[in-house]
Amino acid sequence: MSELAAQKLARLSSIVAERGAWSEQVAQVKRMRQWVLDVEHILDGSWAQAGAVVSNAKVGRHLDAWRKQMSRHLTDGTLSELEQECLTAFLQQLTNLRPHLVQCYDREGFPRTNNEMERSIRGLKTRYRRISGRKNWNNYLLRYGRSVAYYQWWEQDAARRQQLVEQASRLDRARWRELRREATTAQREQLTRFRFRHKRQAYLTSLEERWAAAAPPRSLP
Image 1 (tube, rainbow, N blue to C red):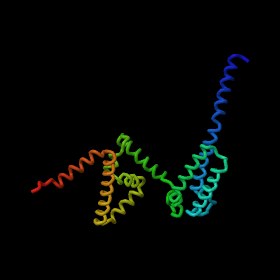
Image 2: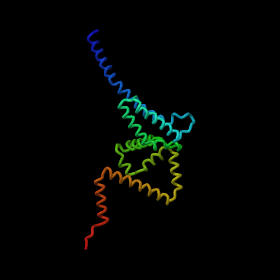
Image 3: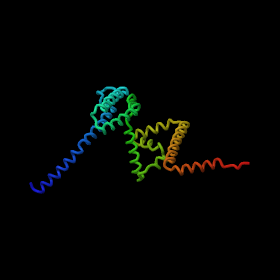
Image 4: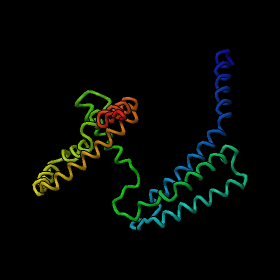
C-alpha cells in the first residue's frame, strides 16, 4: 500500500470512527422526533378511514391512548436518561395543552392550525414590501389597521370586489357609523399597545402631559 493510500485509509477510518461515536445520539434524536410525528399523525386525523367523521372525542381517545402508552416507557428501562427527561417534558406539555388540542374537529371548516393565517400575513407583508420597498410594516399596520387584510381579500378577484359593492349598497348609515366606530376603537387599542410596549417612556410622558392639561393643579385656599 502506498503512502498516499495509507493516509486516505487513515482519514476514512477516522471519519467512520467519529460517525460511530455519534450514532447513539443520532438514534436518540430520531426516536424523539418520531414522538412529535406520532402526535401530529393523531391530531391531523389521517388515521381515520376514508369518509369517516373525525370528532373531538375520537381524536381525544387516540391522543390519550398514546400518552398512556408512552408514559409506560418512563419506567420500563427502555429509554436513556436524556430520553426520559425529554419524554417527561413532552408528555407534560401535552397534558397542559390537552383541553385545547382537540376542540376544532366538531366544527366543520374550522382550521386545526394557524398555518393558513400565517401564510396570509406573509402575503400581506410581501405585497407591502413590493409597494413601499420597506421591510418594517409597523407604521402601515398602525395607520390602516384591519383594513389591510380586508383590502387584500377584496382585491383577490373580481367576484369579491362585486360582493363588497353589493354589501356596501345595502348598508344603512347607522350601521356604517357603528362599524366605523368599532374599527376605530380596535385600531386605537392596537396603537396604544404598540406605544406602551415599544415606546413606553414617551407614551407615559404623553399621558402625564394630557392629565396635567385636563386637570390643572389648583392652589389651596
